[in-house]
Length: 419
Image (cartoon, rainbow, N blue to C red):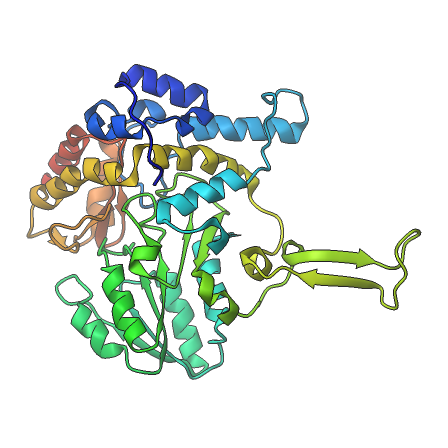
């Protein structure tokens, strides 16, 4: 994180005014004031335009007004209508990438743009030549279900797959330790489980895996922007995240991190124009002479390995605002504000009918309960109260953010108690 000199305390009204009107102002040195005066910032309801009680950020985080304004400027640029601010460049991706690097404590040179988290995991898996191999991969039952499907399909092609089962709503480190044998190629986990909100101790997972010669991939889509992440401290090898959840971006854009020294291990499995360092034609008038139709060379950096074609630039301009916001207020402050709401949900929702799935004292942004016939029984009650959470056939998932407050948590608890 950046360190800044301290300025005087800002009023909430002035803070919101600055954020909404001048996105670049988030580079100003406010962060220390925010952490000292957190109650004056959160709940940041004025940053959003949310109808009803929205406790479903793990599904998709609401976009802020500031990001909405950035997208509007970008669309004006695409329309070529002359209405963009002077000097505005909706195709500048550097600021957003740099700010994501700060959030996970990575170097910008270790990050590539990708379309989604699962594309990132596929790039790692295929870069390691796992499809069609008999290599050993260890994962767990709380990893993203799309990832489990991928590894299950690769197991049908010969991959030696081990899936660690949960105990007491946790993936026990001892069970993971037993599963990771010498010769294991990859350990693949979700840092925060979308299924239950369980959070791994990423540093310990990496220590165990690396002691056996295995590499570690972490899906961080339910963690990045919601809980502190330090890729250097954890020593994780690879991680990826889309941006429409806690990073408050949009669909179709994400990030892949690869530890710098491991990039040569991953082969290129998708090739496109963004990977070129040079292209020279020899067929058009005034082209330099050559025996071939063209000559081309590849970049050796992250772009050269993983980026293929065009980007979802509307999502990137949304990120320019939201990642500035997160780096300014601090992910630690977001987590600190949210934690009492998480604790209250775990204490206040009655057990019995509601079976807890999230470990007590969890610091993740997700709380889950099993409930028989949840969709049939609870969904109508929640809709009538204008409360939005994730409701499945026999389960609910609640995920508050920094625009929520304890009154909304109590409202949800009362509705659930009436079930």
